[in-house]
Length: 91
Ligand SMILES: [Zn+2]
Image (cartoon, rainbow, N blue to C red; front, side):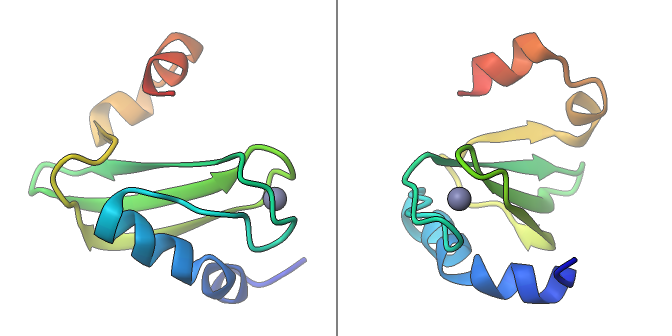
Protein backbone atom coordinates (compact mmCIF):
# COMPACT_ATOMS: atom_id res chain seq x y z
CA UNK A 1 0.00 0.00 0.00
CA UNK A 2 1.26 3.42 -0.96
CA UNK A 3 2.25 5.70 1.89
CA UNK A 4 -0.05 8.65 2.63
CA UNK A 5 2.68 11.26 2.03
CA UNK A 6 3.54 9.72 -1.34
CA UNK A 7 -0.11 9.70 -2.42
CA UNK A 8 -0.53 13.32 -1.29
CA UNK A 9 2.47 14.36 -3.40
CA UNK A 10 0.81 12.90 -6.50
CA UNK A 11 -2.28 15.03 -5.84
CA UNK A 12 -0.26 18.13 -4.93
CA UNK A 13 -0.83 20.02 -8.20
CA UNK A 14 -4.56 19.24 -8.04
CA UNK A 15 -4.75 20.60 -4.50
CA UNK A 16 -2.97 23.81 -5.47
CA UNK A 17 -5.39 24.27 -8.39
CA UNK A 18 -8.42 23.70 -6.18
CA UNK A 19 -7.16 26.43 -3.86
CA UNK A 20 -6.46 28.84 -6.73
CA UNK A 21 -9.46 28.35 -9.02
CA UNK A 22 -11.63 25.52 -7.67
CA UNK A 23 -10.73 23.11 -10.49
CA UNK A 24 -9.52 19.63 -9.59
CA UNK A 25 -8.08 18.62 -12.95
CA UNK A 26 -7.13 15.10 -13.98
CA UNK A 27 -6.48 12.21 -11.63
CA UNK A 28 -2.70 11.71 -11.26
CA UNK A 29 -3.21 7.95 -11.19
CA UNK A 30 -5.53 7.15 -14.13
CA UNK A 31 -5.76 10.57 -15.90
CA UNK A 32 -9.56 10.61 -15.65
CA UNK A 33 -11.28 13.99 -15.43
CA UNK A 34 -14.00 12.48 -13.24
CA UNK A 35 -12.56 13.96 -10.02
CA UNK A 36 -14.03 15.92 -7.15
CA UNK A 37 -13.15 17.59 -3.84
CA UNK A 38 -14.61 19.04 -0.68
CA UNK A 39 -13.24 21.20 2.13
CA UNK A 40 -14.35 20.14 5.60
CA UNK A 41 -14.38 23.22 7.80
CA UNK A 42 -13.73 23.32 11.51
CA UNK A 43 -15.18 26.11 13.60
CA UNK A 44 -12.17 28.37 13.13
CA UNK A 45 -12.47 28.75 9.34
CA UNK A 46 -9.73 26.25 8.71
CA UNK A 47 -10.08 22.59 7.96
CA UNK A 48 -8.99 19.83 5.66
CA UNK A 49 -9.26 19.16 1.97
CA UNK A 50 -10.27 15.82 0.50
CA UNK A 51 -9.78 15.16 -3.20
CA UNK A 52 -10.66 11.97 -5.04
CA UNK A 53 -11.08 10.26 -8.36
CA UNK A 54 -14.53 8.83 -9.07
CA UNK A 55 -13.14 6.55 -11.79
CA UNK A 56 -10.35 4.71 -9.94
CA UNK A 57 -11.16 5.54 -6.30
CA UNK A 58 -7.76 7.04 -5.42
CA UNK A 59 -7.93 9.87 -2.89
CA UNK A 60 -5.83 12.19 -0.79
CA UNK A 61 -6.34 14.52 2.15
CA UNK A 62 -4.48 17.49 3.52
CA UNK A 63 -5.11 18.85 7.00
CA UNK A 64 -4.86 22.30 8.57
CA UNK A 65 -5.44 24.32 5.42
CA UNK A 66 -7.28 27.62 5.14
CA UNK A 67 -10.45 27.39 3.07
CA UNK A 68 -10.71 29.86 0.17
CA UNK A 69 -14.04 31.57 -0.46
CA UNK A 70 -16.43 30.10 -3.01
CA UNK A 71 -15.21 26.53 -2.70
CA UNK A 72 -17.33 23.49 -1.97
CA UNK A 73 -17.24 23.00 1.76
CA UNK A 74 -19.19 21.40 4.56
CA UNK A 75 -18.84 21.83 8.29
CA UNK A 76 -17.01 19.22 10.34
CA UNK A 77 -20.25 18.59 12.25
CA UNK A 78 -22.11 17.90 9.01
CA UNK A 79 -19.29 15.68 7.79
CA UNK A 80 -19.74 13.48 10.85
CA UNK A 81 -23.42 13.10 10.00
CA UNK A 82 -22.89 12.85 6.25
CA UNK A 83 -25.48 10.76 4.51
CA UNK A 84 -26.08 9.91 0.90
CA UNK A 85 -28.59 12.76 0.44
CA UNK A 86 -25.99 15.38 1.39
CA UNK A 87 -23.33 13.80 -0.81
CA UNK A 88 -25.68 14.12 -3.78
CA UNK A 89 -26.44 17.73 -2.82
CA UNK A 90 -22.71 18.53 -2.86
CA UNK A 91 -22.19 17.12 -6.35
ZN1 LIG B 1 -8.18 7.98 -11.16
